[in-house]
Amino acid sequence: MSKATVIADKASGIALGVIALANLLFVISFAIVLLIGASTVKAAALQACTGENLLQQLEKEDPGKLAELRLEAARTPNGQGLLWKVEKDGVEPSFLFGTIHLTDERVTKLTAEAQAAFDDARTVVIETTDILDEKQAAISLMSHPELMMLPGTTTLKSLLSPEDAEVVNQALEERGIPPGSVAKMQPWLLTSMVSIPACEFSRRRSGLEVLDAKLARDAEAAGKAIAGLETAVSQLRAMASLPLELHVEGLVQTLKLGDRLDDVFETMIALYEARDIGIIWPLAKTMVPSAKNGYAEFEQVMVVTRNHGMVENAEPHLDAGGAFIAVGALHLPGEEGLVALLRQAGYRVTRAD
Image (cartoon, rainbow, N blue to C red):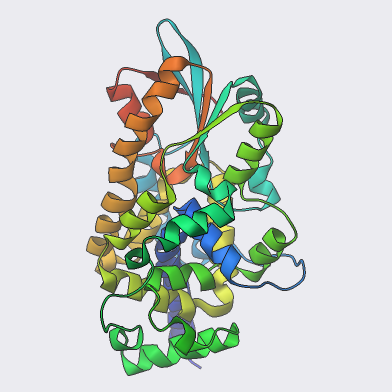
């Protein structure tokens, strides 16, 4: 094999990882989708994750590209930080905290600053309280079959090329999912079932909870009030409003990732630990320029539009004071991120970590 071929193989591997990283934002952005995925597929015994940070690989193989990513990330407003203090005259301060909907110990163990803010809060607000009751969430979702199943005579097979159909069927069979049993399932829902690493599944099956649910359970045990900014149905409607073609691409590329799925999640956790949220979008869009428009639409629907709704629903809690508001970290940065929108709404918002 020539040196050029080796380099091309490495580059394509990284690119595939970045494509899947962007597509998996579908999953990581919605607490309710992760709940669906974890409750649908059985996992093996408790096991360790073995992923590698894609950015470390990129630093070795294309440092110039990594420098470009970091430069663009540096231009992202409020791109660094997970904990923000929210103040308004005459009101007790509240805190805004960015989460990632995973069970990894590096995620679920709060920093001293975040733990203190959580302990002092009277009310804990998460994206949706539906994640705390799987049975009730299932009832709510099943009452909207149009959000879960493909319309009319459309099937997953009819949306795929023969080559992609072969990839999907083989990957499903390897996971113990008969392709015929999910023929009418919305592609994004199927993605949620196959995109979470086995190690993450096994942790959930052992009783560990994603960070958001853990915060709510801890709040409940401490006698704090608990509230949500969205509902399971509203999250599904946002997901379903995106073009079907984008969901199909996300499913296929995620399955093509194969064993490198752990790398994608390790990358997300590493960025979260570093509080470097602003680099996530540059990583997705810069590395996959051909898909830029699709991801722009995804960002608008799944992040920006929801941000405006979150601010509106958060204001009563902020005006009451003493709130700890925990939402997916992707909602914090940017010109229309929660930090910027809260400032526009008249609050003083300063980084607290």
